[in-house]
Image 1 (tube, rainbow, N blue to C red):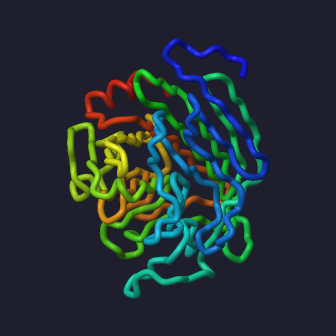
Image 2 (image 1 turned 90 degrees about the vertical axis):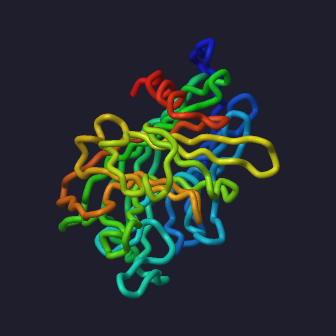
Amino acid sequence: MSAVPSTTTTPLTVTHTHGERVRVAAGGTELLSYVYAPDPEAFESRKPYVHPLRTLSGRLVSGYRPHDHRWHKGLQMTASHLSGQNFWGGNSYVHGQGYLPLHERVGSMRHDGFDSFEADADRLTFGESLTWVENGGAEWARERRTVAVHSADAEAGAYAIDWSIHLTNIRDEALHFGSPTTAGREMAGYTGLHWRGPRDFTGGQVLTPAGPSTDEETMGTPAAEQPWIAFVGTHDDVDAQSTLVFAHAPENADAVHASHWFVRSEPTPTVAFSWAFFEEFALEPGESFAYRYRVLVADGAWDPHRIEGRLKSLAW
C-alpha cells in the first residue's frame, strides 16, 4: 500500500489468493470477494462473480446459489441468449416450451489472467482477460474487463464498484445478443451485468431519479431516461437497511445498443443492466462493443436526493 488516503476515505486492504479470488476489506470488514476460480457445476455457467458483497458496516447485500436459481451468484456478467447459447446458466427459455434444462446450450467465461493489478490505500483496479467459450469448446469472444473498488467513505456510509466490459467477436460469423423477451417471453429481458440480492431483500423498495417506484413501473425503462436506479432492502436479524445504486456511465448512451432496466423486488430481488431487452443486436466478426457501469453500496435507506448527490461527487 503506497498512497495516503484522503481524510474522508476509508483505507482498503486487498488480499489476492492466486488462482481463486481477490478480497477487498475496509476497517476489518470484508466488502467483497471477486471469485474467478472455475465453478464445479458447468450447468451454472462457469464465470467470475462477486460474492459475498457487503456494506461498510458488514451487511450482506448479495445472494449466492439461491434454491430458486442456483446460477444466480452475487454480481456477475451474463448473456442469457447469445447465438443459441446460454452464458447465464441454468435453464434456457424456449418459446412455447418455457424453461428447459438444455445442458448443451450452457457456455462459460474463462478467466485467462490479469493484465493489470493496482492496489493502493484507497483504490483497487484490475484488468482481466477472459474468453467466452460455447458449450462445445469453440471460443466465441475475447473480453477485456476492468473492475475498480474505490471511494470507500465511512462518513458517507458508502463505496463504489466500477465494472467495464470490452468484448470482441472472434468467430467467423456474427454473434447475436438477445434475452428471453427477444425469444418470446414478455418483460423478461434480463441479460448483461446482473445483481442478485439476498433473500431478505425480497419486496424491497425500487427507486428512480423521480422517486419511489415499483417493479412494473421500472421494468424495461430506457437507461437514456433513467441513468440510474436503486434498490433498498431490509435485513433479517438486525434492525438495518441497505441501498444499492446501479448507474450507467455517460458514454453508454453511444454504445452499440440501447440499454433498458431489468428489475424485480418480488419474487426475487434482482437488477440487470440489460443490453438487449426488447430486440436483438448483432456483433459482426472482428467487431467490439463496450459498456461501463457503477454500483454504489451503501448503509441505510437512501433517498433519490442523497443518491444524486453522491453520484455527482464521484468522477467517472
